[in-house]
Image (tube, rainbow, N blue to C red; front, side):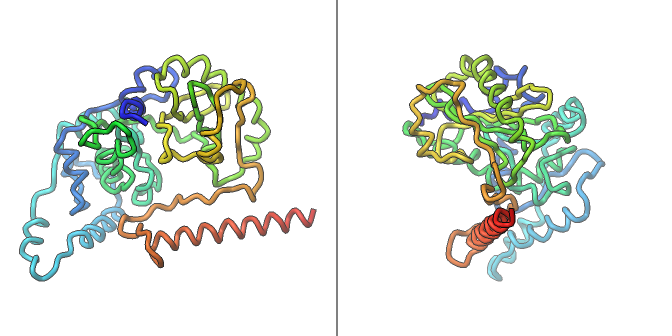
Length: 345
């Protein structure tokens, strides 16, 4: 994988070409001062808002205060330094806030944010709505500041590139504000895998649930995605190997949601990377397999519940190990229930 292939997957690079077949999005370049704020791991302090409207409920404020106290705890020898740091005025980004406020209004009053490549999905736990829906600059700043997944964008974007230079970060960062649709159904999102400019596989994106309705529409959905790839994607996206995510509407339209590099850090979902690497691109496009969860025992455990960075340690007995163990136990229980159900019938 090369740097140019990763760069093509930045939303500010691909959105212009696919605007007519994507969801409404407004993109702003972020000032370096805001990037420095996101990179500062010493505090969860939110920017001082120029608006009198406070969209964050007390539950969120209390949680921020609690986490902030944990992050800024110092030893007795550092008490003085700690007092100086906690007494510093909160950061403020009035120009950026005004731009974002206007964009939110232009997009209907609610958006979800993402940086060059990633959205802060792992931070949904701290949102008052438990999702990425934002109606104010404060809510956006809270999600971005609380996300660990954005660390990839901010400092490790090119780590896996064979031709990376000294810096593993792009020269500029952007925030994309994407129109929020409450009617979006997770079962109608799909990930498409392209190798050698040929579509070689399609997977249901939400692999933690079986959706019988999608099973019934499987053939029609596959035809729609294959046709969309041929007509709207293949000749516009320059890389040979990549993945892209789409949404198929109830009335048969296909919308591009995102592009991702052909790399192991992109989830293969219901495929494996060994399988995908084995495709030679000579199969007929009409024969491309669309994989969906067909029965409950085929459900993959989904680690949807994000937790603070301090909890995500990989050692024995750590919080992360507990999460994985719990997911495995739930999967076993689901399989046993399904086997019992099958025996009864």
